[in-house]
Structure formats: C-alpha cells, structure tokens
Image (cartoon, rainbow, N blue to C red; front, side, top):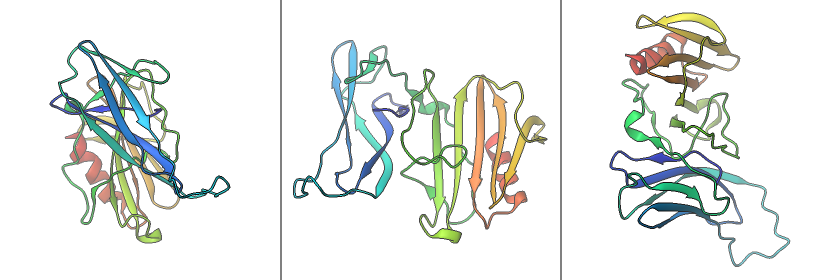
Length: 214
C-alpha cells in the first residue's frame, strides 16, 4: 500500500486511498494485530471470469477502511509487504469546512493539491491527509471539487499572491479553468484549500477558505 493513512478519533478505524482497474474488485484493507504491532495489507483480487489477455484500461479510485479490534495506542504500525513504518494522520487534527456551496458532499476519493487524483498516492515520512468534497462528479463542466490538505511543518512562504485570511498571512493561486488554492501555516502544519470548479466565483472560494481558517 502506498497512500497516507488516516486514524479515526477513537483510534480504531484506519482509512487509505486506493486505485484499481475494471479487471479487479475494489481492494480491501486488512490489519493483522498483535499486542504490540499492527501490520496492514492491501488485498487485491482479479475478477475470476476474465481471461489473461483482457485489457483493463479504465481505472477507479476511492477510499478503503478497516476497523481494529483494539485502539492503536502505542502499537507500531507497518506495511506487511514492504515492512516500512506507517505513521497515520490523526483525524482529530482535521480541519473542517464550515461553509461549502450547495450540492457539495464528502467524497469517497482523494483529489490532492494540483488536481492530482491519479495513482499512486505516495505516503510521506510524516503523516498528511487530504479531505475532498465533490459536486456532480464526472459531469464535465458541471462538476466541482473542494479539498483540504494538511501537512506537518509550516512553510516560510508560499507561491502566488499574498493575502490575509481572518488576519492570518496566506497565499492565493489562481489558474485557468476556475482552479484556485489558498495556503497558510497553522499550529505547526501547512494547510491548503483548493477548489476546481468553473462555476465557483473568487469571492465564494475565499469564503470557503476563510471559514476553514477561522
């Protein structure tokens, strides 16, 4: 498994982004627990009725989760295949949008800053997480997304235009096609709010960012 891992507030549910093809079932996240360790495995299964020469061009992405028998606590978490250490992002640290335009709902996939929704989802040494909200997914010019990404470490300065969000220094980037992002530092983290929505105005985007930043 390559993606970041989110740990729920009760310490028992683990979530990670995955991708799969039309030739596979949606992958499953499995946990092997001992008194001191947790080993995570992403199980993939090719559909049995397909022949070896079947072409699998279409890809899907989403989130999968597993619930532990006991809270993580001080247990060490690793990837069962690579044996690399996994440090999950604590869900209690997640920023919540206090305002979203009508029609936006929590998404079951991840769209990271820059519109990167394609695999692989690369897990960094320090835990981070992106929460995504979407409207009219896969409907072309009527579709839109808003994502909130949090990474450890405060950036000294950001790209784009310097702005103020509720009195806090931030940087705004605007791109063709209605894509915008705002980035700021908060309590040891860098927070990026991004929206890709051709129907969203600049003022509406800034309202979303301010309501996250409040």
